[in-house]
Image (cartoon, rainbow, N blue to C red; front, side, top):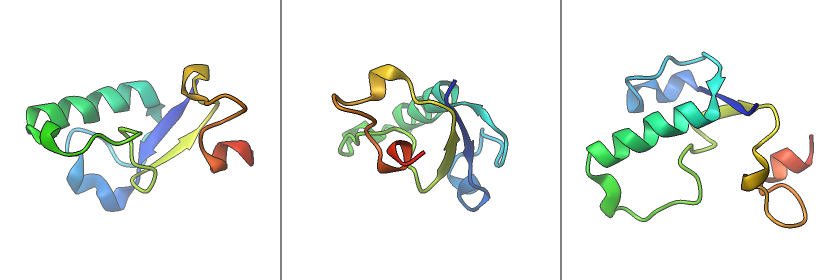
Length: 80
C-alpha cells in the first residue's frame, strides 16, 4: 500500500492533515482534492498529481494504475 506523510514545513497549506503522520496516499489525496474543490481552485491548471512531491514523502509501492507503460512514472520510484 502506498503511504504518504505531510512535510511539517507545508502544514499550513493542509490544516486538516497531521504533519509527519504516515497515512494511505489515496486517503490524503482525497482530502487534498476535496479541499481544492471546496476552495474553488478548480480554475487553476490541473496537475499530473494531486499530492505535490515537495510537500509529501512517500513509501510503499505505487498503485499499478499510476504506472506508465514500461515502468514507474516517477524517477524516485524506479530507483528503489
